[in-house]
Image (cartoon, rainbow, N blue to C red; front, side, top):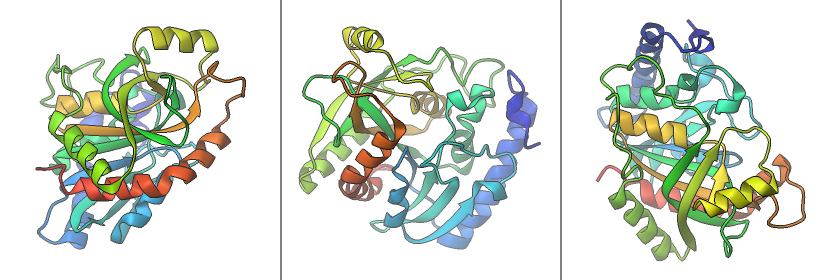
Length: 290
């Protein structure tokens, strides 16, 4: 069962069983940690932002290895565990570590956790990621609230047979919930945390983009670029979860400066902005299910 994601496309029946089994295990853990209360939101912790787990009060950690069928992340900075705890008194689930398209397998493995969250009845998803700054005036060490996205991965997690009750053609006209975006922006203002707003473009990776590609992305309206988030948002919207997302701008995109890009720079920059990002997430989560 653990290898269901290796088929292309993934067998829907096996995936449905895997999602159901994973949700059942996590549901037991949720009852152990929260009793009759239910999580108001889930938080996806992107590259180098695993420190967000420290903001959860009295956390219960659930290793992905203990959940059959859950694809393990392979990228540095992704812990590979679910965190059950409260943020500013609100019960929430932290997803500490995600799987990317470039790690291989069917795109459905990238959104496995989203479908588990849906099976658990989690109403809202706060996503974070590390991204390269494209727009002039955006700098490493700053945060960007995602207002919309461009999918240039060439993949969709909805490819193939329809999963469960998901629609064949989900509406993506407001992929990032307006009310949730406004709530996060308001919290940032209250906390005195600068927060840009812009369009995120997702590429497949794992190589960084060329300067010519960045010039093209700027031309089509992208403000920041990364290799995650969009597949998960597509699956979340198909499932009916409300979404909001913030990028940590960790580097200038290729060609913006003469400096070469590397993942160590990404991780180092996230540490600079980590405290502000953690405060923003903790203050925002309680509003996500409103």
